[in-house]
Image (cartoon, rainbow over all chains, first blue to last red; front, side):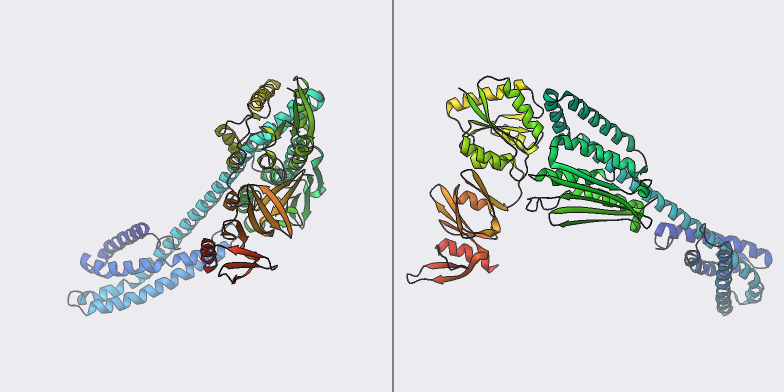
Length: 350
Length: 247
């Protein structure tokens, strides 16, 4: 969308500026032997027309954008050529307009004096077009900044959302009360176990608070958090919850948004293991594949479960965050096959 | 009176804490510890405990489903960590429940109330409670039938038809018949009305099993099933059937 044509208020301001420029130029022309009426009759229609011609500067500025990687020479050359072309076109129209004015009784005597102004008109046309180009470059820069800001804001909202979700998961009544109940049970039979559970719970809560608020954390930190969570759930589920994990050494330095995996790991327990009489194995696999970080989380699920789709909201947030951060460079897929639920993430390793 | 108790919870530690508490309470005996609903149903039929201490969230069979299967034979104290629906249902129906983690005193008080209630011969409103305790999930996808110590899980698509028999329904499924203590009207409300139609006062039919409709020598309509089985169709049953097939 054209930044000026697309909004009436901007177009009005734009035309207003052009008209003032026209009046100023007319004032200048009165110094060269034209009366005010004659100068205005020549310039106002031409300037108004040129205002619309100059809107084409937007396409020029888009065709050779001014970014850190573009060549300055190219921008200069294309600006110069475009302004010469537009101005030449304008001059042609001006000739026609002068011929038209000549046919009227009022302006016929001024025709020759009009023609003397043509070189000035050409110079004016070039200058005005260049000015218009400059304005468009500035507008585009504004727009780019605004878009970047909006994307950043969106990302922040999603991150905040994930943090809130993770924090809520900790005080998720099921998780918290069941953990407390496990501690209560352990105090009677296994005091050391009870203490270990208290420590695990404390560390998990503290770690979650630590990572939330940060932009990126190493994948190993995220995995450590997931492991704390799973250790706590393992106390509860006992032999029903088994874990297998494989982390590529060269993937461990990759940075990920904090709490990215947490909802997925929680789903694996609450929508997977908890619904199975015998429990099962949760598999975590982190590797590096041609520059990308590949993460797979797999858990068994109840083949004839009544819930249609496991963990919709948590998955949704993960997908949106990846999208906001990496766009097309990241992807997330889920599969259900042979009684196992599998989430695959692939994101740039930064 | 000595209370014979079965503890039902899928978590070892959760059972352990109940066991520990019960050791300190007089006149109780733990007759079974069950790690899931199936074991609970088995324990009820084989050991006839007076009371189930029953966790709500369990795999495959929830506490409420266990209640539906055995609720008339045994008293129940529910246990849950947190479940809004369940807690509301308990409150509405004045059912005793324990919130994890709970104290030995709280358990002891619950047992006192169970003794009182057993003394008065009260039982729980089994079906109402089970219906209120679970979020509405639309139509049921499986029907649970208790057969002594065993629980049969019948996926609805495998049910051919259901026949009313006094206070029971007889479900025909893969050539076998299963008896369940429930009225046909009650079961009908749980089934998908786009698949199951009441063709007669005593019959609900799975539409997928219907081969054709015939008129017999006495001018009565008869449903012929895929396997050749014949079921009567009443006048209003035929109206319902045509309305459904006409769509």
